[in-house]
Image 1 (cartoon, helix red, strand yellow):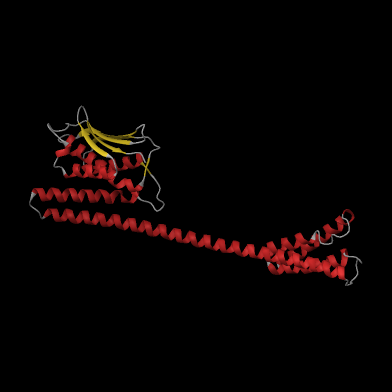
Image 2 (tube, helix red, strand yellow; image 1 turned 135 degrees about the horizontal axis):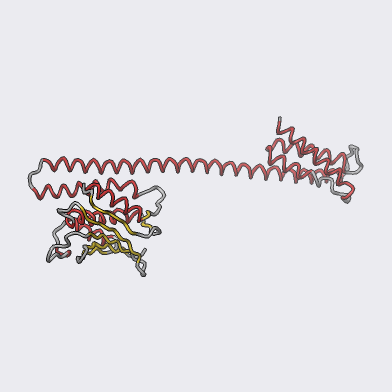
Length: 317
């Protein structure tokens, strides 16, 4: 009822405008203010109020603004004028109705797409959560299995595997997101290093990260990069700072002129053993770091001196 009442009001306004404009208009423009009334009523209230506006405005124009004025007569010219008006009004109503139906369909599709996107993101996060938990469970099982093994070599191998699985499980949630966003490298390395220092149990280790805030890393490169950096930090704590409760471990990130990226992990510990050669080392972790670096099309090197430096060089993207 409100829609039809507003439609009648719009028709009344159109009639008033047409009456006021009568002295200014030349003969032959009986519908000049009524087409907008039909269009506005249809757009605001739908097809039926639009049809009402079209019929009412047509009758008003016929009776008041088509000669002979204020008389009901049928002539060939009047029939033609009313037919022209009817065709234009029908086309306007149909076009507006079609556009509104199309807009409603688009709105429904957009709402459905948003619901599907929200559901997909929820499922994705749940999947990542379950994967991370499963990795932690496997790490725990390896740790339990290690207790029943007396062979020291086997125990160390299981311990390394459990530690790496636990590391992947801890960082898995932050490595991936459903939108494929880039990772902020400085924040990621800070959190990773803090976890590793905490896991080592050495409260006296001074750990720092010096990296530009504007460097990002693609998620697909994050896992191998994290494993390499974790191996370097763990070696610095366990071997470089062996026998010491205090020491410094520093991660520095450098952007080279050619676009490549250097990630240096250094410590102020005891340094590399005499005659150490990375190419011939039997350390599984260091061999794994070299292999992962090659997968990233980069390189991994160790150098001694006043500070032991493990450098991961990543090529420009």
